[in-house]
Image (spheres, rainbow, N blue to C red):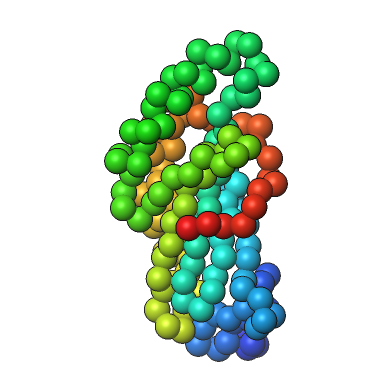
Length: 152
């Protein structure tokens, strides 16, 4: 059974050929989802997709038992950018959230299946690095959904 086009799906309008565009043309399409218990935000502008994954949070200095863990994490973080694939970069936010940032260029005009495939492939590539971060003490728990805008 064919789908009536245009179809509204969250922040997108999808035409009969699967091309996606922001539902509100004056705004970029934003959406969020989770991967491995971590919040991710995405922003689509034209054919450029920006991803922001909150990998975890460095423990607070207010937690006395976290001092050793913080020292290990801060010793590891300077080495992290050299370990990451070139399509990802890492930022330690002022609130101690560790952000993994990436940009993806999609075909013009973007197609919904290409968007989903690109996100899936990028997250599969990120998965082993999340494992390394967990071993270094950066875990997904207790991460607030708050945060600033995507800065890739």
